[in-house]
Length: 199
Length: 199
DNA sequence: GAAGTTCTTGACTGCTCGGTCCACCATAAG
DNA sequence: CTTATGGTGGACCGAGCAGTCAAGAACTTC
Image (cartoon, rainbow over all chains, first blue to last red; front, side):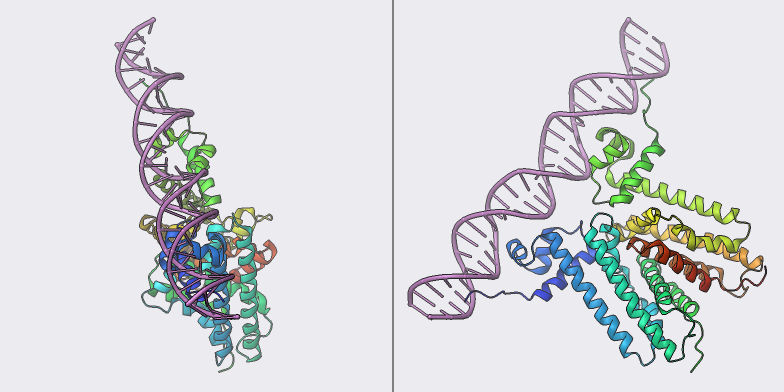
């Protein structure tokens, strides 16, 4: 009965997400968003509301995707302990470092807006709680598989792993070379996931 | 022969630093800077140049102070291992969490401007190299004191500790409660600084 | 093909921003 | 007291910003 949208919502959200990711919230202008999305101002406003709402949509889309990929990676790993190791080492894998050089969008957004925007802070809090739960499940599985000592609290270890991972991704942002970064990731993995009793 | 300055440069830098710390670079307007410093526009420009230069001055002042305090803390500790533990646990000590809730100015700035401003990125890189060296010295001292196994590379361990600390401070920004945060810090400290052979 | 509805485009509007400039003022030297 | 010097504060400017709006285009339905 009416003209259909000429763009794909998810595609626009991805483009917008990349722009915010590269430049941050404040440093991204509506002109940037129009350029990367290929849409006019009016279309953006009609479809997503104002800049902040568009940002929040892109951010939620990002965290949903991230958790989806995390869930997948943890589930598909033949052995849970390997998945936990990957958690620390995988972000660094890219030899150019381009992947982690821009960090994690959720972390960047928390840094830039956490003090000013309660909604962003709240989203960050819930996102990391979910991540902790996912990792905690994987720790528990590794314990059942005999790869981690049973005495450890899965959630506590998950929090330590998550903090270590965030620290690593951040160090990558400072321009640390990938070789050093990889070594640090391995070193942290070895210390946080010590005994592989089975094998 | 002329009118002397009516303000203390260090005091202004501290006020400006706090403002950038709370709000970030982009979200801080010159009006904010005038308000917190008590100076007029002309005075700020005459004394420090434009907004970006003022920011860089405040940032350098911050990292200098931080390294000074770190150096002091590491040197004054009766035992080097205690200083390393403090490195992870001290940032969380404040029961209100207000201290770490705003994170580390250097880390925030790297997140916000690292992609866009090479000078900030370069400063971040050198700052963290210095931190690594300071912590590495302390690790070596702990080894000499017999509190850490001699086989470990001090710089490698220093990097792992620094990454863990940055991760903890970041987790604090997401609104994680201090009790959980403290537990995570202790857990990381226990795993990264394992054996206290002496004592 | 006609009608109705939604999408699209880009000109337009205040507004706030960083930065400049100049008139004024406080001070120190002679 | 006079004069020269440099600090001070606010008026001012152009640019760039987020957000609005109305006219026209595209599509579906009847």
